[in-house]
Amino acid sequence: MTIVETVLVFVGIPAGIVAVLVFGVYGKTLLHQPNRYRPGKAWTYPPAWYVAHPDALDTHAAPAASVTAVGGASGEW
Amino acid sequence: MSGDVVSSSTQVQHGPVGQVGSGDGAFTTRQLSRLDEALTLSSKESGLEFSVYVGELAAPTRAHAEALFEQLNPISVLLAVSPGQRCLHIVTGDESAKRLPNRACALAALAMRAAFANGDLTGGITIGLRMLADSAGHA
Image (tube, chains in turn brown, orange):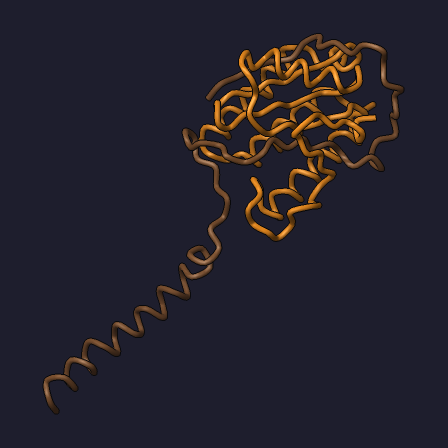
């Protein structure tokens, strides 16, 4: 065996096996990075307003002439 | 009814519709369906109309959240979350404040803050909705 063959067999094959294992374990996250929020990271997405599905609401209150905020709470993190 | 609420440059979503699968929205499909389930269940259980706003709030943020609330009903509860500014506001109206005292809102806000500080946006919103619906009780 030449030196090139020795290197290929004893370094190339193990490296290949390791690469396959690494891809099997982390491949999914590497290919599809989930949109994870981290505190302090800028929020670049457009504003979105989520409401309950209208079918779930059985209280279809008529929109009042003027709706004012009465109470609630606030917080920061 | 709250389904008609549209403010400029804000998109209204009923559960996981729209950008499903595209992966470039703020939430993944799985997170959106969790959000939809929490919203629908808590609204159905309590009879209050919950809605969640996620996005930038103009300063002063509390006033912006209250201005958004004015497009809803007196029975609505608005959870406004601005991840970029790291602030959240829970706003109640004439009817919903009778069911949800400020103390209950503050407790829900505390739980949401804890989840948000850990980076769990969907979990925090879900916990907040569940706690608010629990303290409001059944319709």
